[in-house]
Length: 194
Image 1 (cartoon, rainbow, N blue to C red):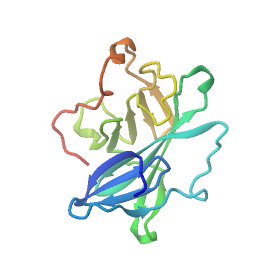
Image 2: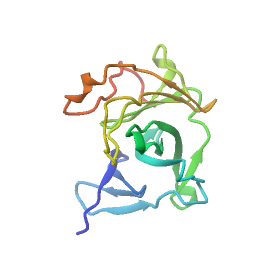
Image 3: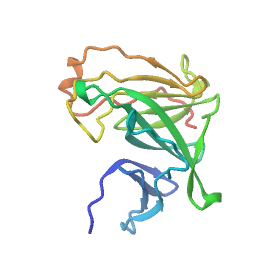
Image 4: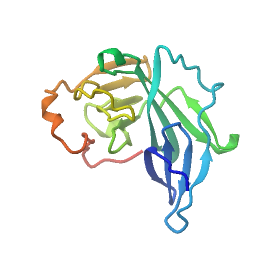
């Protein structure tokens, strides 16, 4: 059997779904542990990617309001100084009406926020959390699949879909994280998930 490496795995509608490092989505359940390809990667027609300027560093799967979303995190191509900063995000929903194709979303909705992390990702109704904005992605430093010259948490913040802008947050001493076995994950108050 061919070995498959996943960027992210999620439990969604009684099955487990995993997204590979190439952006393909497979499903499997515990009774029948064979992988079944659900959706291919986002095609070039659905996305215009300039690989010289940025590249997809990580794929996430998130359930949001009953839909399966694929989120692509783009990194600036700055490998010469070993610091990779997030340069953008694209969000796609799986459309069963279009033959299990990915459809790009221009907005999450004004009341939805998504928290992305290497250990967990979750969507929430933002008005239920004081101080958090809707139509935004909150992201933590991520151990991406490249893992070249990791210098500690330098890439955490908020991406606002409405004005396509970043706010860098969480200025912390990187040495506090270097000894952790696992990367940070989100701790949220009791709230209503999207």
